[in-house]
Picture 1 (cartoon, rainbow, N blue to C red):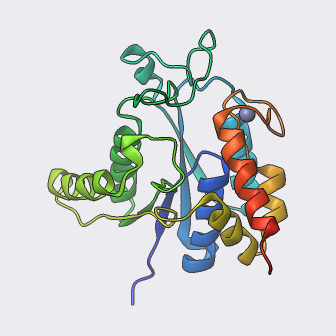
Picture 2 (cartoon, rainbow, N blue to C red):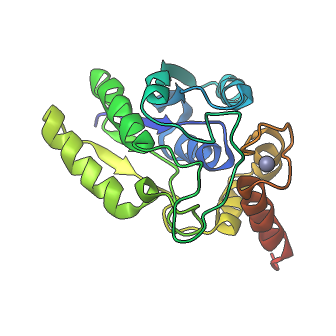
Length: 218
Ligand SMILES: [Zn+2]
């Protein structure tokens, strides 16, 4: 039997790090690779953390420059001058980057196919998510079909966190034996504050989930 390999879309945040750890448990370290994207994020700390974690876990990491995305979209995640705002009035939060996950999946697909990898893992979630349309299951399934048709290849897009709450994602890290590791080494803050600013929507979601999980009877 041929060994199955997986490519994990990896940002160095809580979600993708938990997906990477789960993939290592499922596929074996030597069968897992990570792919990260540089697109002019507000702070380089995200990518530094991703590189550190990939090195630490002994995972081969490919970094792709997708800064071209800045030429077509103006957004608070990329533009330092903009204040981060949560979703309001039925609108998307201003951290939403049009087409980001679509571009990431496409490039991950090209890279995976080159190496004969079918399984692509992405830590998107539609339960606790910030309201991004490209985190929804219907989009991922549609993209899977499009990629298969576009490249005449059988991709398998896997979303382990799709229906989990943040508390359940913390639980997943804990069951893998990496609760402290994820807490200590992952970066999620929109403002790029080491250890988290504790105030931005991303920090609030992460901390609330951790508190909920820690409060449970175990
Ligand atoms: Zn923050």
